[in-house]
Image (tube, rainbow, N blue to C red):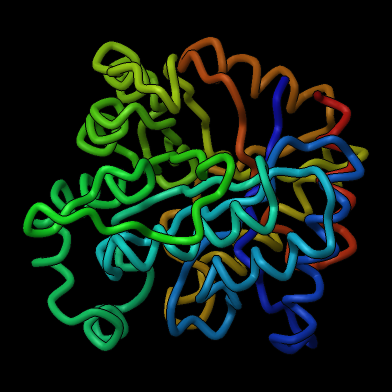
Length: 305
């Protein structure tokens, strides 16, 4: 079972944002030690409970404090940005940390309507241009971009470009991923669907590319693991009360699909989901509102690999 970590960089009282970012680095180092495949960090804006506004900056810091684990965004919210700048940032990361960088892309606003407008103006208009923006980004990442018939290069050029993934919860995002030969991550913890239909559509439509010859699918799962079922349920209750705060105060809404249990019971749950959805990997966020217990959850989950 291939497992990876998704971190929202939560600011858990009495920690301040600086302490929360230090805990992000500790989680990445722990994930590397435990043999997780990837450490990804999300992007959200103007949420006091989260310290993940700039994934590329945090990943640069964490890359210097780890050695092997792949690092990526889960997800960088592409409608807010110009494709060349995104390609330059992730080319820089891939040059600093060869063979370790993933560029996970999403198209959600990542915050309130007012925050989205402050960040990039007409967000809905930007989303409507997502096909063109994504195509330009892929062209920059693979040195195909031209403007007025003149090549434009997003430098520095790494020896190995970032591996591109699209994150979503519907067949539209799956189709984008398939069209561009990218990996696909289904946001199980953000959706009422199990993802089987969406991932199947991705696999059926996948167009092989030089950078990814075969489809690769992940499930993004919310899971809390503990030594006993009772402890897992107790932590889940704490997590649910924390999750259900208004989105502008803490975590995003829509996080009700939380798996809980011991390593043995979670293995059964994850294997069942994997069979239904034909997933190659699980990207796990463990939303425990206590840093030490969150680490313990990931330590226990590592036994599933």
